[in-house]
Amino acid sequence: MRLPLDDTRSRIAATAAGLIFLVGSCAIQAVPAPTTRPTPAPLPTLNPDRIAQGRAIYSQFCASCHGANAEGAPNWEQPDARGDLPAPPHDDSGHTWRHSDTQLAEIILGGLRDTFNKTPELTMPPFSGRLSDEEVSAVVTYFKRLWSPEHREFQEQQNRRPSMPSPSPGGAR
Image 1 (cartoon, one colour):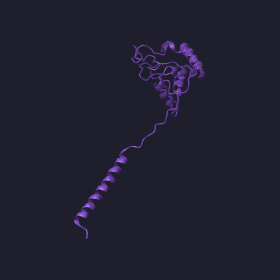
Image 2 (tube, rainbow, N blue to C red):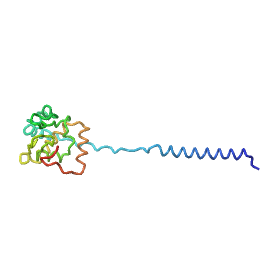
Image 3 (cartoon, rainbow, N blue to C red):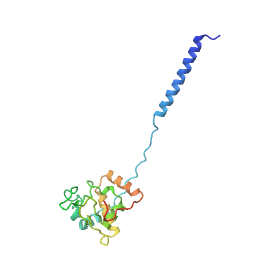
């Protein structure tokens, strides 16, 4: 014969076991599985000869607007008297590193009109016919030398993304 106390103990034990199981299951589900972040690919090594070539081309064709050290025109973020934005820096303080190599080449070769400008002229003249693809690539390599590792990594990610159409000379930068 079973005593009422035995039934009560059995029910308490079964309830406790069920609660332990339930709480344990929730705890296991609540703890996120460890995620592994892919190790970023090492940044491509920049060829010193290419950097020097790009620097020389930059000095000849770009420095008069963008500064001798790619620092940009003074007050480059403020419109000038005509309402146009001055030439931006290509060093780490600017935004050049946000664009892929392809976009930078298209801007250099095709020119650019910043959509914020008040005048209809191109902000930057096209260098197509004046610079070869090889020379443009050397200039972009020179720019990369001026960027932090974090900005270079971001820019390399842009290079790995599918190409999107670049703005026409009348488009935004």
